Length: 84
Image (cartoon, rainbow, N blue to C red; front, side, top):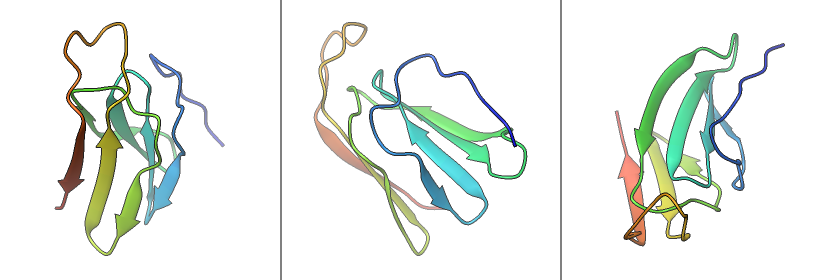
């Protein structure tokens, strides 16, 4: 259906929630793509690398970060929750 290039390896799982595909990358970026066409809906940058899977429940997105990455000088181990 569609394909997107990422700036870093997606070591975590791609997670589908409603009409979005949420993808974390090793360099700490999280991107939500529209399931229908792959357009970018939202993105953010965490303070450490990500090698875990996002969790989604009700209206909550939870992502854990903590992996060392060469482009992140002082990684911060954290769990971040997002809600609309």
